[in-house]
Length: 304
Ligand SMILES: [Zn+2]
View 1: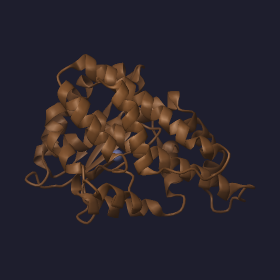
View 2 (view 1 turned 135 degrees about the vertical axis):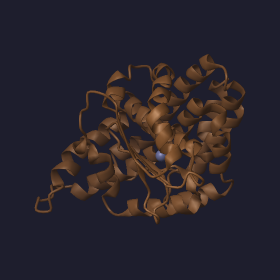
View 3 (view 1 turned 60 degrees about the vertical axis):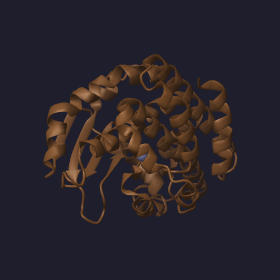
């Protein structure tokens, strides 16, 4: 769920901690730790004066401004999501770099910032925040439309959640089901990252221009995928969407909404198609070049 603003190396390095067995399952699962708040909660504990000032004075307004567009694209009310939203801004540990995370199935967003305003300003913060907010919207959409998400939620309930205790006897087929879950998760995440970036761009418009240029590494994307990073696997598709559709339509809100609806449906359908084999066999695969080329041909015909 991290954004690639700190550079490829850092993204890959940070991802490696997710390589631990069951970690993806655990990430998906942190549902249990969510709290129901009656109103949006924003907490900022940072020495970064620029970010702190923005968060205290303008963040809520910017989140509310994005609501009509987000709802029109998603096709459902986000009242509950907005009410439950919990945002915590903290200073990053010196060694970990600045980043963000959104815990799936919850409305919790954490952003870790660089304490120095000269290194990390409001633009970087908004870039990270609206990327994470895009994850939230995508997750809400998948929960309503994707059969893969339903399968994953069942796997989580049956196999992942009951076995958090070290003493629990593992049920028959446990490892196979966890493998199925992790394979499905590996397919879902590149789509999640793609939508999170597209959503960020739709909200921030030209403000985000340099960031998309920064996060697109020709040829490096494949290497980062092979190193286990899910952020750049669909860079080719994201670059296409940005150049051929989003940039020319940045100021046409109706086009952004209708295109956003198309993108959500295409991504969700593709997740279901690609994860279909996983329902019968724990192995299902994601081949970046093939997935990008399929997405390009579908989107080229449907986005205008
Ligand atoms: Zn992300």
